[in-house]
Length: 272
Image 1 (tube, helix red, strand yellow):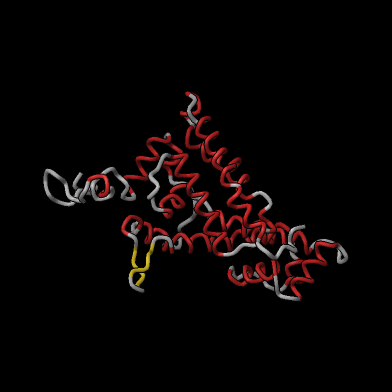
Image 2 (cartoon, helix red, strand yellow):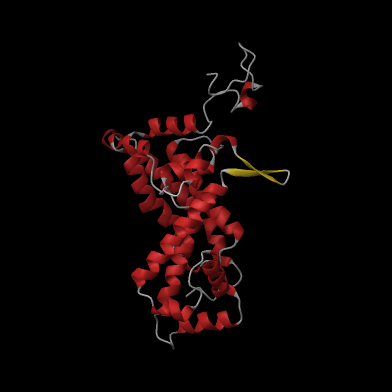
């Protein structure tokens, strides 16, 4: 019923929910400290993240006004949650976490929910107030319908609402999820690059992911070490693979220099 909102007030709930997410993550970390839980720690953390953290963050997001700032905030909050649960440094690359956990970006999850919600509204009776509101706002090209129309075009989905209405819920969900996988891969690949003086350059810590993501056979899934090890081992894998080991090259502020004090060369992973 909030599709008539225009002022972005729903988006403010994203920041307001950050404290709830923090409490959820704190509870998950406490739960993971038990002796029994440690044997299945990563499986348990992943399941609890999907069942507790994400619903807390994305509740009622079907009708949110979703601009670029809100998308970035959502993604930042979920990445913060992963870093907190795994005990990773704040500077751990976002791409490494998304790739390792096999997660969808939080902002893409919201867009999936919104596109599926569109189909639900279109299935309602013609005189239902939510459908009437939807078409009225669409006629004026404003609010939530304008955002949804842009999302359909961006994801290369069917843009004719009458055609969308004729599709079954299962078929439409499948189409939306397939488009979401493509966009998630594209966004993940973009996060492996940075802009330097107008040029697009691969980020040093995640450049090894680029050929993997560019492979047509790549499928989103948690990396094997995520499900076979505990949290400590998983953290060590991520830090070791993506340039986050405790060395002077990665933590020059704490060491005072990027050079090894004994050998006077760059103190990085190969040197260690």
